[in-house]
Length: 264
Ligand SMILES: Cc1cc2nc3c(=O)[nH]c(=O)nc-3n(C[C@H](O)[C@H](O)[C@H](O)COP(=O)(O)OP(=O)(O)OC[C@H]3O[C@@H](n4cnc5c(N)ncnc54)[C@H](O)[C@@H]3O)c2cc1C
Image 1 (cartoon, rainbow, N blue to C red):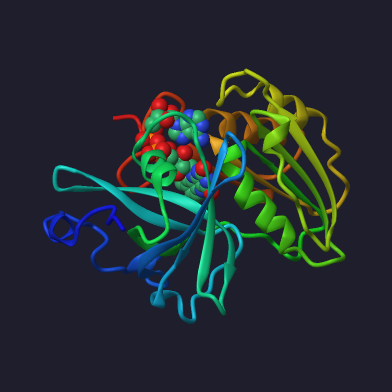
Image 2 (cartoon, rainbow, N blue to C red):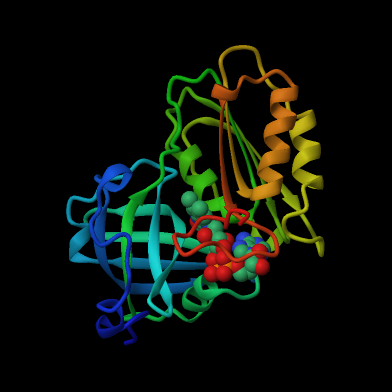
């Protein structure tokens, strides 16, 4: 059993999230333990976490948990992972992380073993599905797979959704169990570079945008998210019809609070 960060180190941190207030007022500190860690494919590691702190936990699909994966001196290094599923009876929260190469989040996730402990904060994030939308369009890369699958699965049976997810290889495809009418397209990069907009941009330019007040959800690499947003607004979607969120930035580690670093 290993602590991601021993309590003695955590106690010394200059931590902006000691008190949860403002947009984090509904989140809670979670003292999490790994129940299971499973390699789903060469790209994905699934980790199941539990905690007594998850008693009565509630969240909206699309929200995430922020894990304290390391420290940089006295600065906490946190990484955010979308909740793929939550079992209230077992108090078990599942995340699926991309094994992209290297980084403090990847290092912790790839070596996580049952019994390992980590501090988390959740739920985080504002974006969830808009149940009243006439149709739903999800676009994202592998970092957004958990979010897209979970959000689509949470839609009611009479909802209509298109999901377009870019992954490295066909082996990375995961099952979708959604009551809604869904069309799921997997784009395979096959040796291409993560964070290249080409595949998703081509789909965004071509995908059917039915009449009515639909909603698009766009997640993934920062410059790709920007490019997709521009394509969709160019095709006539209003800004308020698009929920977009940058999950990572190519060539740059995320900031200590888990979001892509802003230009300094
Ligand atoms: C709200 C939110 C929800 C998220 N949900 C998930 C999720 O469910 N699953 C998930 O895997 N990720 C998710 N992410 C993205 C994840 O937090 C980032 O990928 C993060 O950078 C990983 O941290 P790290 O320490 O491994 O790498 P970092 O230290 O941040 O980065 C190190 C290097 O790796 C590169 N890198 C980082 N991520 C990727 C990637 N996905 N592909 C290729 N290169 C990369 C960076 O460009 C950098 O060069 C989410 C992010 C946010 C903000």
